[in-house]
Image 1 (cartoon, helix red, strand yellow):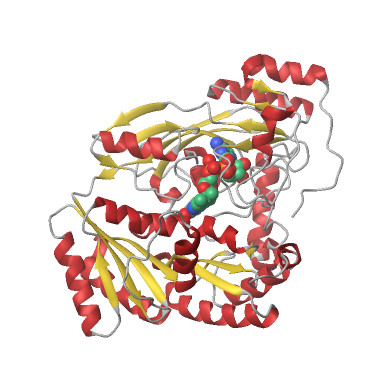
Image 2 (tube, rainbow, N blue to C red):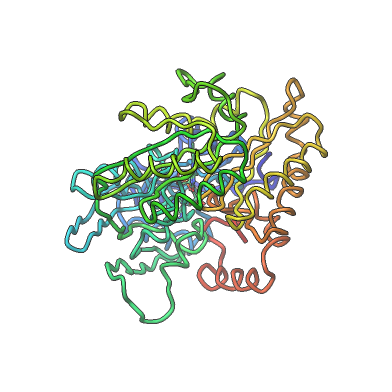
Length: 475
Ligand code: FAD
């Protein structure tokens, strides 16, 4: 997939100097080699273009940049860890990149209120570690946590592996500080759970993918740290069996069921074949697997997970299972889960979908989508996995073995349309957790309620009438 073919606007040396004066020469990147990493993304689907990357160190500098951008009609693309998967952080048309990574202070840790106030550039793993050091849990967790930032997490309303128990990024933020396109700062850094003073602006900026404002800081919710965590790797026959196991686990474990990941056999095949040091945790192969985790404040996690598995075996839902004996084994289970995405590269082209349907409809989605995709491209290999507990499946399709990668990838839109049409019929969403960005912008009108889409466009025009912030993304 390429970026737009429109000629990129040229920034005059005078304008570059005015922007550079705000952040200081050192943090205004103009060298082509230094800019290069900001223009590419994880999947190499897009190649961006930009003459200037600005790396502000404070909210005041972000505000001054936005003010100058509005005055000079200069478009900005906000960027955090650059791990987004829908091309939202890429400057497709020569926009100035606004990198928030230097805003990396943790401003406040309030243990009585159970909150942590982080600036936008704080890396997610750092936020988790600071919470942990204070004997608290910040539960947002995803494969890119070593690089992605709190600002990016909130702007994409990230989900991840603990959303089942703790919710998505939106559920984990109490307040935000946001710079608007014209440079005004919205201070909504509230620590309040209860605040009924009109429209909820916070929730507008969360998930807006940088199109309505620049998030510069946020108040995050902290939770008690679980005292006991038990993790099982389970082999079973079908997504239907996995769904029944989920229902059983929810009733037995209630709020202590923190992860429930569904994995197709082909994922384990790819991981064992291409993932360094990855081994199949079970002694024989199964058509499907579940990675299940229970996290409890009490010492009952082990007995709970054992009771669930015992009952599931009696009911014929589970064929085999192993409970992690120690931290290393638990880590090995999670490493397998986390490398499912990267190892697909070794098998050639992969057409990815990040979709959600009502939890009960996941087996139907997998059956129908697999039939339709293989009919469309004989030999195509569906690679479904993901957060079954949230109804969120990464329905990826790997090219037929030995096929031409580029020819396969030219069918991206056709395959998307096939899968997304099934998703829509099942009452689902074409973007569960990665966002719309650039990739799905033109698809959105086919699947979003037209009145809702119209309201989104009205909001964009109200917040950013000159289309300065992340133009060409989402709407
Ligand atoms: P970026 O990629 O830099 O930006 C993402 C979007 O947010 C862009 O539109 C950008 O313009 C905007 N943005 C960034 N910072 C700001 C800001 N401060 N203010 C306003 N707008 C901003 N996502 C999930 O939800 N769940 C997963 O399980 C998951 N797993 C992943 C695993 C891997 C290996 C990878 C590579 C990605 C995964 N992702 C997942 C996607 C990605 O990590 C998330 O979308 C993440 O939240 C992006 O954060 P970032 O800091 O990298 O943002």
